[in-house]
Length: 292
Image (cartoon, rainbow, N blue to C red; front, side):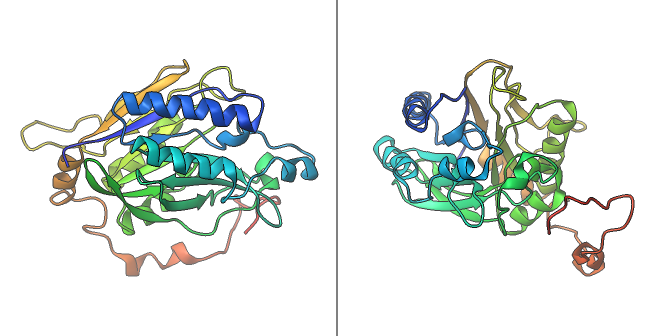
């Protein structure tokens, strides 16, 4: 498997669920024409990352993981012979979840991930957090690849990408909905570097409130034997405009790099990290709105 092509669908949402479904179909078909192995949507595409303050309205706008909206993208994945990562506000109790469902090219549901690190200091306090991170082996036309997922704010916790790496992830998919600037891009660059994984992040373009495009991908390959010094792991960084941005991951090179370099799980000392399991929080980090 020489490479993996991930289509970052940096597109603006429409006003209704059905309009988002139709626009999503259009862009998935375009992504297939461009040679994508995976098409990835920005965060909570079903509602265009809208979280109403009224809880009844919020619940009414959610769809189940087995809904017509979600399953239609599985059917499309089978039709196009291309994996699709569709995002949605998931119907869930006691409150909806921020969720990604990944279908393989045969239309099989391979991974359902709900955002673990909800932004409880903001409107995501009205969502139910997920409780784990998952990795799946994805059968693509180019060969098999191990895929993990995290969503937006998850990126700000090194543990998110770390546990995905420990579970075998080679590529991490990251739907997003926030302003992407140097610090957030640096977080993604760091997660790719320290875990020797590829990371594909798709954001909404300029025009969506509190978003500015700059979808990105990093391959995690910091050093090449034939080159002197380190290299930038950036594969692609989009501008602000709506469009499809193709991230070409050199998967065989990533695998060879992981087999010889010093990061990831090569030289860790887990027995010395016991403090990481402590749930105690001390000043200056105590927050009244924090939900365990």
